[in-house]
Image (cartoon, rainbow, N blue to C red; front, side):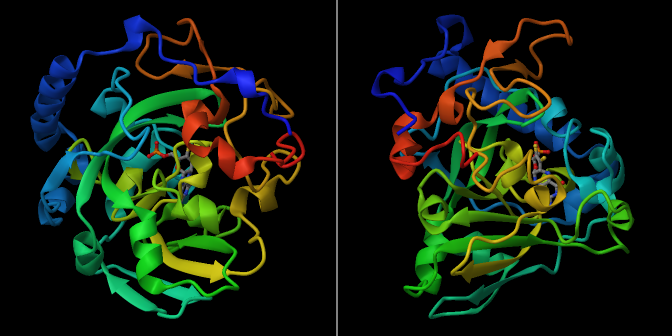
Length: 321
Ligand code: MTE
C-alpha cells in the first residue's frame, strides 16, 4: 500500500487559521456583500432564482469545515473552469448568464430500484442544507477555500436505492449549444461527464451543492446543482448536473477521454504523483497575493486523508491516479 501510516494529517499553519468568532462574523459580512456583488452582470438571473432553504447549523460531518482563510467571493466567482462557456478563467463569469437554471430536472438512471427524475424544488427540499467550508485544489496547481451550501450526495443516493450491480456513479452535465458557447469547441467531448465509485459518492464529504457564500450558486460555479468532492482535483466536481447514472463498469470521463495519460479516473489530490507536465507537490492559494506569492505544500487527499484515506487502502495510487 502506498500510503505510509505516519504521514498523518498536516494541520494548517497557525497563521492560516481564523478564530471562529472572526470567521463567522466575516462570513456574515461576506454573505451580505454577496447579495450586492456576487452576480454582477447576471443579477437579473440571480433575482429570479429561488432563495435557498434556510441553512442549518455548521456541518457536523467530520472534516467538513476548515478554519483556513476563505477565498474572497470575487475570486470564487470570477476565476473559474467551466469549459462549456470557454477555456479562459474569466469566460464563465462573462458568458454564463445565458444558462437557464429553471426549470431544471435531474434524471436518475441505471442500477437503482427507484429511477425517475427530481425537479430542482424537490432536490432543494430533500435534506437539510448545511454549510461546508472545503479546500478546492485544481489540477492546474491553484487552490481556494470555499463555503459551499448543500447536503451529502448520500442523502439522494439512499433515496433511489442502488441495486447490488451499482458500482459507480456517472454525473452527466448540461451540453446545450444554444446556451453554452464553449460547446461548439472540440476541446472536450460533450456532455462533460465525471464519475465516482459508489463508496466515494456515498462518502459524507461528497456534497450535492446548491449554493456558495450563503447564496444560490452563480451560473459560473455550476448552477443550479453540482457536486463538490473536496479530496479530488477540482475537475471531478461536475457542474450543472442533469443526469446521474448508476452503473456497473467504471465510466469514461471527459478528462480521461481527452488526455488519458494525464487524468486518471480517481484523480485524488496526490502530491506524490506529478502531472506529466508539472509537479503537484505545491499549490498557489488564490487570493494570497500575486503569481509570485509563496506556494504552500499540497496535502495528500487535499488534507482529507483522515476522512477518506481508508477508501483507498491497498490501492497503488501511483498507478490508479
Ligand atoms: N463541470 C463542467 N460541467 N464543466 C467544466 O468545465 N470544470 C471542472 C469542474 N467542473 C468543469 C466542471 C474544473 S477543471 C474545476 S477546477 C472546477 O469545476 C472549478 O469549479 P469552480 O469554477 O466553481 O471553482
